[in-house]
Image (cartoon, rainbow, N blue to C red; front, top):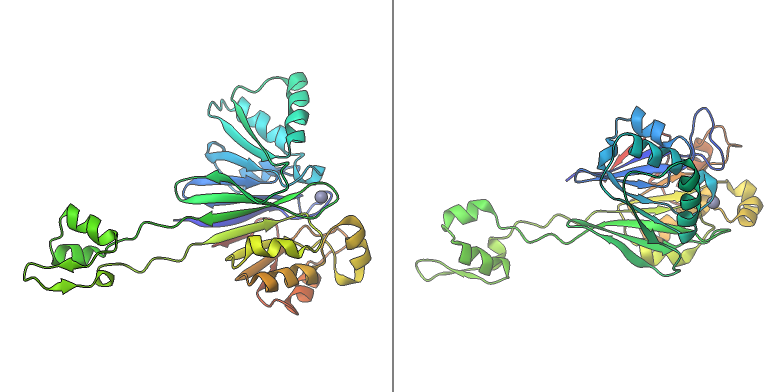
Length: 302
Ligand SMILES: [Zn+2]
């Protein structure tokens, strides 16, 4: 099953001609999950040929404008395009209030919004689908913010089809083997359970952490993920500014990746003061080698 992340916007604070503000599309099994929705997100979705009807879940990390100002345009376009199916939005309850005022005056939408309040300060599961689940967990920012963890679920154990043919297994045999039992063949010989089973593929995961100051408490929530996106607004040279605004430096993002033993780190949410994000990447790789500074349009397969 496809599991990939596309960077739609990677700048902090304001859009530039090269980078839009935060938004990402997570694709899994023909569903598109949108994380944050900075200004211009719908244009990026169009440029990159994402199908709007496949977006049924939008996750907003916090209510700084560079993470959600694009939602009004996107939601209005859904309506103009004749959307009928429900849209789930996961955000701080204040966004519901803001949207109600907005759509009261700009015109009602012709589909239903199911709002999921993220104003709780605990880690919890917020979405549970057949093959994937999503958790939110608190970050440390100037206003309440949360990160998201997308995690594949345990798959049902699968039997090697060659073994099914070889032993001409019935449905009852298959059920029994799937429950972990050994099999007795027609000659009365015992065949060990593990001989029938295919190696289970490791479960894949993606964690999104923006915006946040250096915050070791998140390490438990994101432990061992295949791909971690962590904000890196500043370099160590501007550490005082990072502390004041409750953002992270590239080095701090790398420390979190190291502590959490993730497989790969991608960094973004760069301050416009850095014209070349390689500066931030070079800083991070001194601590965590498998780091990449993202650009709008980058795609990461998980
Ligand atoms: Zn922020």
